[in-house]
Image 1 (cartoon, one colour):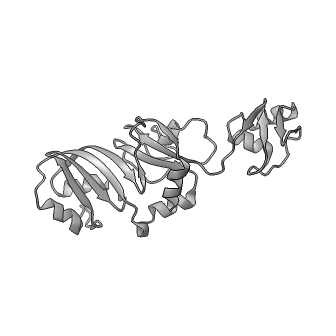
Image 2 (tube, rainbow, N blue to C red; image 1 turned 60 degrees about the vertical axis):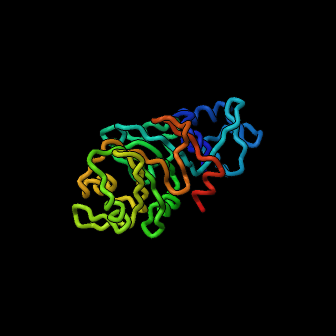
Image 3 (cartoon, rainbow, N blue to C red; image 1 turned 180 degrees about the vertical axis):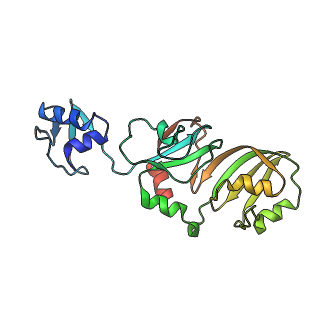
Length: 230
């Protein structure tokens, strides 16, 4: 990768600004001052310093976010998006893996690893997703079996078998293996129940960290990433 492109990707400035930094001798590669802004490096091996500080570059990025209400799961939209919450990685091609509704909170994976995202979202892989909710209406005993047999949505689609746990009279936890549009809300609606509040607490092997507040995010640990790729 070109040195100026890497620095611009890491938000050290615009392409014009980082070219100026390089020409001014502010960037070192493997201990040598580089003044050629067209200089190419192996970003996986080169040791780069800028103003005496070592630059860390990772091609693939993985973040876990506790999505707040009011944000769209998209990269660009007229309304605020979850990507707007990620600071300092504007040029890295980040995107949310799957979608949570605007008013749904909880665990969201954000990455620029398209291959991993495809595997996690592929219906054939049946990746578990667990949501906790509050709802209005009376949950009847026979509804447990309906979830197991597969709820039929308003458009005639029959959902895969799901598991519902009743936590209290109007609170529950549901495990699904697919991600249709507004699926959880539509499944509940099919039974005459309306979701009031919805939060995703698990996606595959990843659990929502208890210390991760709404609107905040962090990089996945090496252990979490290994579990996810497994």
